[in-house]
Image (cartoon, rainbow, N blue to C red; front, side, top):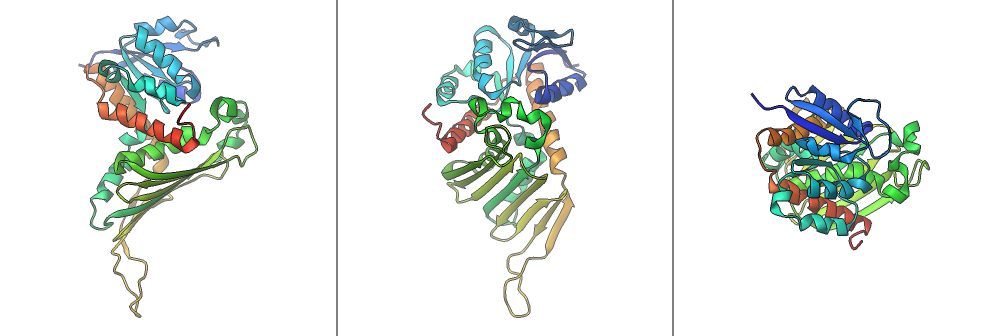
Length: 327
C-alpha cells in the first residue's frame, strides 16, 4: 500500500487549480497547504506563511513565471522534499546558470513540468520515427491556437503584461512543443523566432512562430497563438509518407512512390487512420506528468537527470530565440 503523500502548492487559480484538482483525485495524496504571498485564500489549507510548505513531502510551484526562481531558491535552501515546478524553469540566463550549478542531490529532487514528454503524442512520435511507412522524418509543422487573449480574465492577468512576461505565448504554450521536438530529435542547429501582438489586448506577444532546424536534418515550424479560433494540427512529413493529426483524427498516407496514369507523383493512399484527440491527450499528459512526480515521492526515487538537463536545455533555447541569452 503506497504511503500517503502530503503536497503543498504555490498558487491557487487557473493552472494551479487544475493541478490541485488532480492531487485531490489521487487517493494516495493529501493537498495539505495552498500558499499565496498576499491574498487570503478561502480554504482552511490556505496560508501566506511560506514556511508551512516545509512540512510537506512535495511542493508544486504553479505561480507566474517570473517568480519561479525565487521559490525554487527558497525551497532548495530550506526544504528537504521534492519540488515540482511549472515551465519555464526560470526567466533569465543568470538564474539558469544557478540551476545548472546545483548539486546532483538537489537536481535529483526537482522536476520541471514539460508534460508532453508523458503524452500519447510523444509515443506517436517515437513510433513514427521508426516507421517504414513514414521513412526518415524531414519536416514537422505544428499549429496550436485558440482565442484566450479575447477572454475577460486575460487582459489583467500576468500573462498579458509585457513587463512580467513579454514572450507570453512562447514561454507558456510554444515551449511545450519546442521541448517535445527536442526530446525526440536532439540538438538544434539553427533557429528563428517571429512574435506578434495581434489581439491588441495587453502588451505581451500573443502569437509566435518559431522555426527550428535540428542537427539530424529535421526542419520544423511551430505556430502558436492566443488570438485565433481554436485549431490543433500537426503534420509530419517523411521521405516515404505523411502523418496528419487534425480534427480528432490521425491519418498516415504512404508510400511516396504513388503515381497517376501519366506516371506523375500523386498523393499517397491512406495507409492508416485512427482517432486521436489532441486536446484530451494534452490534458491526460498533465495527469501523467504529475503522477510521475508523485510516484517518485511515494517510492523515494530520484528524478531522472535527463529530465532536469533537457528542461534547462529547452529553457536556454527559449532565451536564444528571444535574445535573452546574456541576461
